[in-house]
Amino acid sequence: MSFSISGKVAIVTGAANGVGLAIARHFIDAGALVMFADMDDERLSKEVEGLGDNARHFAGDLRQKLTIANLLSATLDSFERVDILINASRQMVASDPLNPDDDAIEMLLEQNLMTSLRLSQLVAKRMIKQADDAADDNEPVGAIVNLSSIAARRTHPALMGYSVSTAALDQMTRSFAVALAPHRIRVNAVAFGSVLSASLKGALKDNSDYRDDIKEHTPMNRIAKPSEVAEAVQFMACDGAGFVTGQIMTVDGGRTLLDPVTAPAH
Image 1 (tube, rainbow, N blue to C red):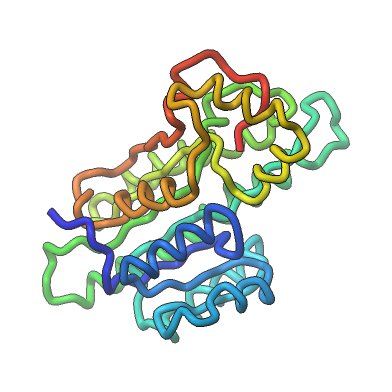
Image 2: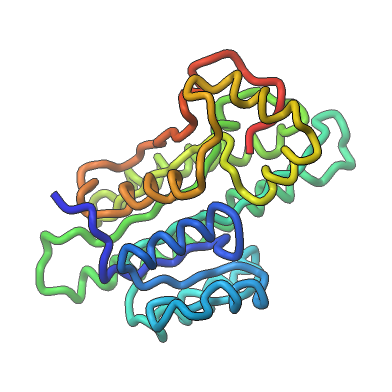
């Protein structure tokens, strides 16, 4: 059993910062060839600088269908194939479930669900074509890993849009897993709780009680490092997990085992 992703070609969305960036960097360190994808061209250029030929970047609004097609084309132009897709682009904003004029829910469904759905459909078709062209019909064809959240199983009314979009993403993961299993493409998700990303660091700086609140409601009594999520994603993406599909791996230090924490998950 091998947990290596060396030589694999991966697209990682949301790769300009946060957990997406941590995953993309981790994959580079593990020997993968990675297309860093996000909207911030300046930030992406800075992040891939000095990483060598194994790292390329693509900037664009992935909510647009043409941009998604261009991302795949850029990846094929750079690396000639794609073996792994990591849908790590996501957004979390407050939403008011009782305000019909609040468009945050619609925006979050587009950003956190539909972008991943469209990109997964397009990349899966390419993976199937690669398999049809390959000589060995027993090798794994590809892996798709979606970044989800424990918010899919928690109840935070002020984060209803985020919770609904991640819950839908979990169901999408299971549906894609069944649809793509005959093509030897695995689809899984990693749902995480509080991770010490830049946004959470800012929130903790502004609210010193927030850190204690998170730790109190986490059996492991700490906040996860981005690298710990990246390692879980690597496992789901590697051939060593070849019989794992349609699963939502939870990386939260045991937080979902307890009563809901009053502060929102990050």
